[in-house]
Image 1 (cartoon, rainbow, N blue to C red):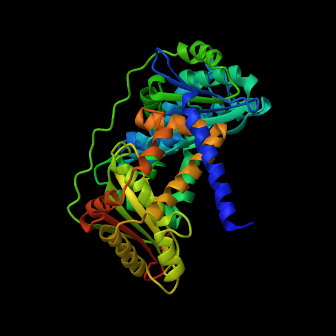
Image 2: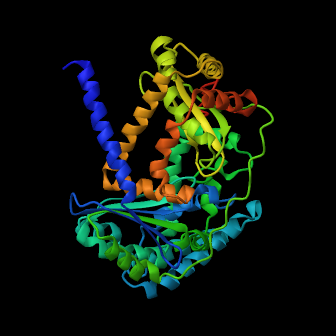
Image 3: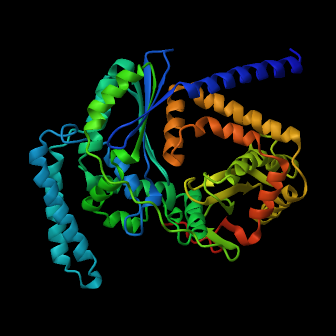
Length: 501
């Protein structure tokens, strides 16, 4: 088949998908409960399936030193059940959990005495803690929540915690929606932090694997910490080890009460539904949860940069490079220009950085650019990541990247490149909105981040309006040395195992 015909057919398919996407906006039903929960609904009757996405407007950015990692830890705890799920007798369990808390706090208080700690008392407290933890475990019904959903056709049960939001999602047969609403409203209102101290060990092990023993994890953690001296975007979502070890169940419960109320939640339901029936169901379940005060915003602002920041991370692994430039939040008009720059520089094999550094000069094994790092709600970073191809170095890659960024300041981007970027955005939009889970995810995310689910559809039109002059202006304004942070992964000079945590 001739290439022109293939391109024409692909264009027609894409246009049909975009027309469908445009019609989707008119099919979204928004409903706000009296307790503040936002409900977003869309009917899709292609199959008797429903996808749900419950997004809370809370993540690592809402933590402070001393409780870093609490949002991610609570995500784990949310699967442990409620007063009626995951337990054989909640009334008998409660005093055992309370004694466990007292013992954990006593152990921590003694440890904080440092060299003056009474080791005999510590040993006795730890022995008693182990005994009480075993008592508490007798009341636990392991993985009852997951088993309940599996038995009722649920698939994809999972959750994620990021800097800005925490998300819970699942797909299941449409006739099981009442069961889901009963279970999830129970989780929002009556979650019990059982197996808390056991799960802390799980998270600490997760941290060891994903960060402490990972070259990529070490580099990104140091990079973010160097980029944000004041703003909590500089703290790891998984938390600092000492904070996780000291975190108490009482602190975690207080965090839950502050950030996991209905007013801080967005629920998107997409699939084989009738909106009026779902609204009535949600009102009768989630609507019974008492309202809580709005969660406090993040007030700390990152002060302006006064010069380039650089950090080296020693680890026995191949070199890596991260270059970041501070940029505005998702609500700023320039954010759309950075989305265009992300595609222009690294989307596909014909993108500028990939073509020059990977294909032509063969300096890099891989290279990518991404915006909104490590979050989108507050001012963040535009980041370029690369790994050199031996015998080339990160220094060579860094210089080549700066040359490409300077080119953006001098030469206008061609209409052909802008059209290619718009085609990529359109294709990604069609793919993302094709599935019920993709649609639910997009609707809930944009409502949580920007208070407007219509951003799901508006973003494409704004990107289409980005001009070559916009790109030159943004490149000149933000891609400067004084606005830059650079992190490099290097091997220890003595090779003496400095990669060990």
